[in-house]
Image (cartoon, rainbow, N blue to C red; front, side, top):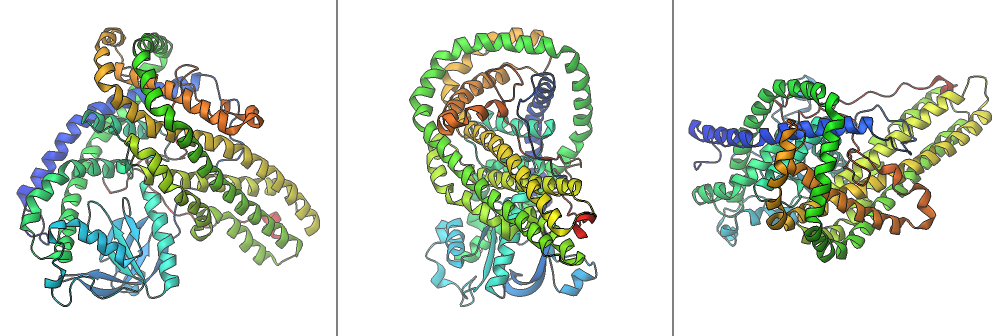
Amino acid sequence: MGGRPSSPLDKQQRQHLRDQMDTLLRNFLPCYRGQLAASVLRQISRELGPQEPAGSQLLRSKKLPRVREHRGPLTQLRGHPPRWQPIFCVLRGDGRLEWFSHKEEYENGNRPLGSTALTGYTLLTSQREYLYLLDALCPASLGDHTQEEPDSLLEVPVRFPLFLQHPFRRHLCFSAATREAQHAWRLALQGGIRLRGTVLQRSQAPAARAFLDAVRLYRQHQGHFGDDDVTLGSDAEVLTAVLMREQLPALRAQTLPGLQGAGRARAWAWTELLEAVHAAVLAGASAGLCAFQPEKDELLASLEKTIRPDVDQLLRLRARVAGRMRTDIKGPLESCLRQHVDLQLPRVAQTLLDTVEALLKVVRTLLAQGMDRLSGHLRQSPSGTRLRREVYSFGEMPWDLALMQTCYRETERSRGRLGQLAAPFGFLGMQSLVFAAQDLAQQLMADAVATFLQLADQCLTTTLNCDQAAQRLERVRGRVLKKFESDSGLAQRRFIRSWGLCIFLPFVLSQLEPSCRKELPEFEGDVLAVGSQALTTEGIYEDVIRGCLLQRIDRELKKALGANDVSCTLDGCLEVPWEQEEADEETEAEREGATCPGQPGSGAQIQPRGPPSSRETLHS
């Protein structure tokens, strides 16, 4: 896979990459099929099992997560040789970035010079930090900078840079004209990166959960137990990242020696080669998953018909096997938990709790301030036009990146400490964890805003004067804040349980691999006898370990919440898909992509919505 990075991959190279993806899919799809069956069984058992005693109090917002479209002039480092050139850049509401040669090209609907889905990128606004990263890409060329031409790459200082770095793609280097423009673009790009990255994690659909579980199991079979950020993005993008990580060492060994240039120019050429490889791999993953889509749809329909009539028998068998298995592995499991997990779990749980509490405290403050502003404007008897504008602004609070940044900042503050606590357990998914916390804050804000607007519409009439209407809004404000407190408590406990499992479960599985996995074949006969792929010994084995871990996490949560919170401890966040003492993770998302994954990011279609219709009673 050598050759000049500026040239397209030749036919043989592209065929090699297609073959690699075909091999990955052949190994991955059987695991995916099994997880689809397990996910359907879990969903049915949840429907038939005890319902949560304390459900959500807030109305669910019907708005899809999005970013506000952002556009404006920038300069971009591009061309051969690379040089700074003016462009007009547009960030779409679905998190896709496009750039045009002129503003008129965009306004006329012409094709962009280039575009990219922001999945997997990291944004840097420091030229020194970016150059350090660029130097590290080709360490053999360190110290060569003095031999480069006077116009060497990024030699001239950039005042307001925006560097988009990707581990498997060409870097995108932009520069804004002012610090204010740089700040606005930074917020917009960070929002787009998060939106694209958490498309699967936000979905509650069985297929999305099954896909993520299948990726985790596939990687465990490859010997990779630690959780990381490989699952950010759509299904095709995730499989692309998995294969790129597998192939990267060989790719570096085969191609780096043949790259032309020195120093940073050589590193830049390396990222251009990665772009071509990534595009070819992504095309193969998209085509493979698109070809699998009809089979997946048929399989899901078939599983629903075959599992639902036999669900009681399946659950009884599962409980019987799980009980025997729990007895067999109890000794090694308890030893592992006492020696490793119990020492760090209190600090991890408390740090997660502190992080989410601080985050949701800021959300509550912003929500209260927004409701107060609406009441204040109503008392002032403003014009209908001005009040409509205020209602629209209030409805847009969850998508106001500058406003929500004050919440998101809380998660960044604890990233380092959490990372240090989790790293010894092989957990390297801090970006996923931070994104999930930020998604949680945005969703709760969106639900609270939707609830306030609906309750206000129900209680206000055109016969009320402004003071009377404001008084009623005050009562609505109190109701919404109470509902928010209930939902935020439930959400933070779910978050801590879910991410506690992400941190500790892969580690415990890896520690028990040599001793306990060899005991699984003795249970195979009982499981196979039922004739359903919804049950596997490996799945039951992981559920047993998950249940034991959740008991410990719940115990730490009860300690941290204190005696005053006994009435709303963990009952409200327990799911009981299998049996009373076990639970499963739950995502906080609200949608599933329904399109074929033929395009990058197609796990879901995210479209920006227009302004919400204004309430007549608030406009009087």
